[in-house]
Image (cartoon, rainbow, N blue to C red):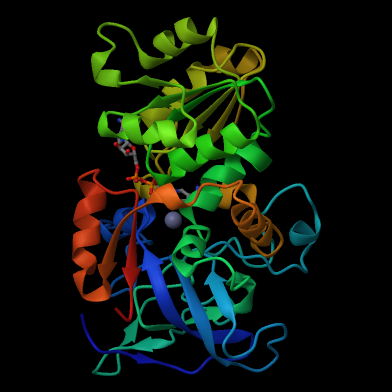
Length: 359
Ligand code: NAD
Ligand code: ZN
């Protein structure tokens, strides 16, 4: 913990007082990076949070002091060709840049340490700080009716999983689904698939504790890779589904699991969605005939959602008691205890740990 200076917001930026934040596996992955262009330190991690607008810069429309807002790592400028198209959630104006501190101002940081040295931002939102400065392309105003700790989940992990089932795979009623990795992202995929009426949702994880938890999110079956004997997980899944699942989702971040998820889908029509974020953007390997025979594969950031358009829809589903957000919160801690949140996630004991700034 150290005291820092957080600069006032510049044009198109908002300074936010963070109310609560949570830890996603992507924070852990970036924290552990020791080389390459993405390993930038010192840095303020954190990208799942909720806050209050404290002050606004010039040319900021639609946000005012006191608004409850969700900072979102994936941009949505609403003006570029891709933001205006319904084909993807890529923002042509800002999404190509993953190195800068702020998208409009390049490497300029809004954080300084006690000696006046810059501190790097993380994913343009940096929420492990009492105050942060965020570009309005990364900001969504939300209804004050949703409890803030539930809303925080929608700024990354849960939206990514639910969105992937809804928008990217477009899972339909009666279909079969396999999810590899039952963290918050994988469990949210199941929640999304359950809401779309999937008939069979198979969870694959090394940690058997996740299976009991998974039942709350609509999983109907489980496979533990360590108990498959000579068989590959994909063979077991093919046996369980009479030839392979309609949809599979990789939610761990390992290329070997992606290959297994891909081959678990049905020949001719199976679709695989990659959500896991591995270290150093490692290459992936797929059997060319498995692809030629009609399977498809794609990746997705933020579950294909356009934050400004789709997060309010998810909030609405929660308020109508259709979307289960409550079961994702397994722990709550004070900001001073944040290191414990890293331990809990790494030991596989938590899904999402809410970290309160003021308690
Ligand atoms: P998590 O740590 O909570 O969950 C990961 C799960 O994978 C754990 O349950 C773990 O037991 C399981 N696992 C680990 N190795 C396994 C293996 N070999 N076989 C089967 N299961 C295994 O993580 P999370 O917060 O749910 O995030 C999951 C992944 O999604 C991470 O890679 C994260 O970076 C990524 N992510 C991507 C996006 C996106 O926009 N695409 C958004 C959020 C998170
Ligand atoms: Zn995340």
